[in-house]
Image 1: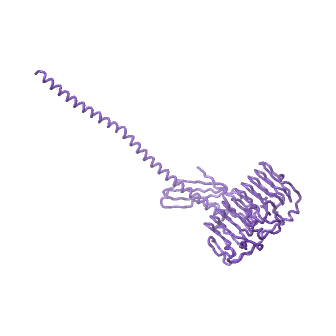
Image 2 (image 1 turned 180 degrees about the horizontal axis):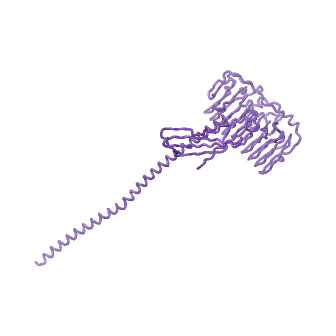
Image 3 (image 1 turned 30 degrees about the horizontal axis):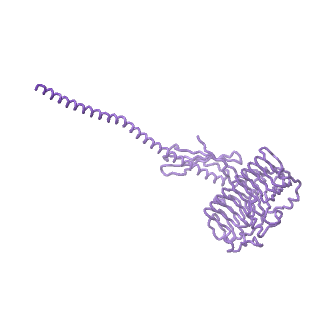
Length: 482
């Protein structure tokens, strides 16, 4: 009986111990959650802050890039404007101050142009595009500065004259400046162009492409309604100038003075060349191997009235001066940075390089025909045809002429050029596949394609500057960081 109280006290003690144990456990659990929150919450705050900072930085970068793009567009617009103004007035010196291009209330863009002319053959255009935000800001938020080097394109004695094959321009090919006479037909496709809105040309087309199919009477001027119209313009191609064309009715794609109604065009003979007289005047005969050159340092002179039998290949940096007429029975190929130079002693007398081979003359890469100090170039003339009398035919007509008109005997590719020089395919085709300085093109067929952009004129240019400068073209383009 005496042990009963001890048993009750033990049970009470155990209950109290169990209670405090539960409280302790709950306290420990609550404390661990709090510690977790204390550790995680600052991390979450840092992540959120970083995300917000990244978003703000990304927005600023995007806005800065947008403003830079606006400044770049303004600079490019200034360069285009400068080229237009210099083509109209080669003494133009720039805008002087900033010219506002865009102002939408929140952003303003301007361009400023300065033109320096260190010598008659070089101009440097400095174009600066600026973006202001807000529009009344004292300083631009973005600036783009571009230096553009320009070179003049000068003319020879002709512009373009074609025979019955005609004139074909494709892709972005352009003829800028100088009158054009076409005995056959004219075809422009894609973004090809004849003339500029600021410098229109005169185009005459005789439509001497009949009968079709050809026979012994070919070529003759087509009658009204026969063999369609002589001028074909497709896509965005365009002609700016005075256009006279037999049997042409459509004036689509022709502007400025445009198509002259009921205009009659009389066919014209291609420029004369006395082949027999040049052959008879030969004073020295050499081989193709003698005439060829493959060197980075060689400088040579060909004598006047020279005949070279076989193929002539001139490459690397060879420089050959010609003292007079040259007759090559094989092909002529000039490539790399090789040059054929007219001797100063010839004055204004234009030498002829006469070529007989079906392969004709090829000018590749930066090959150049260099005029002399008086501004006189040379004439490259090819005589191959499909006629049995080739290359000594006095005349080629009928199906022989029709079949010869598409044979390429003169080609220029990859910046090959010849200011003041004439490229003349007597019975065949001249193909221009590049941009460069060319005095004139003459051929039964003349074709310009791809990026061929050639500027012609009608007056021989002597010591520059002179009126024969018809346009300035970009020779270098570089960004200036400062």
